[in-house]
Amino acid sequence: MQFDYYNNPNGATIEDVVKKIEQQYALGYTFFVIDSFSRISGNSNADSVWKNQNVTMARLQEVAQRLDVAVVVLHHTNKNGKFE
Image (spheres, rainbow, N blue to C red):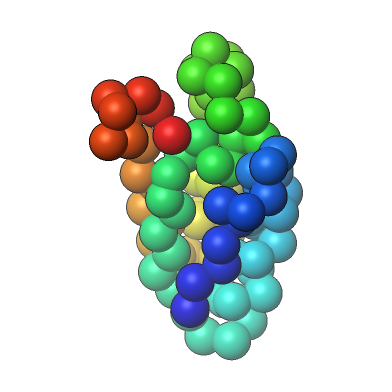
């Protein structure tokens, strides 16, 4: 199952993602891939992504442990060498 936040100019908030994980967990899903990290940061500015990364990752870790699921977060550059 894929949820695409790409078309949202503000990205998805971490709480949007946590809500989706919880909803899909209720349906039996236990493995989640988030591509990419900056899309769930709520801002495509690389500086803002880095400032918020600890809060975002801590929230994902909390939900993964609470639900006993795997959450994989990808963070990479785009074709132009810039962070997405």
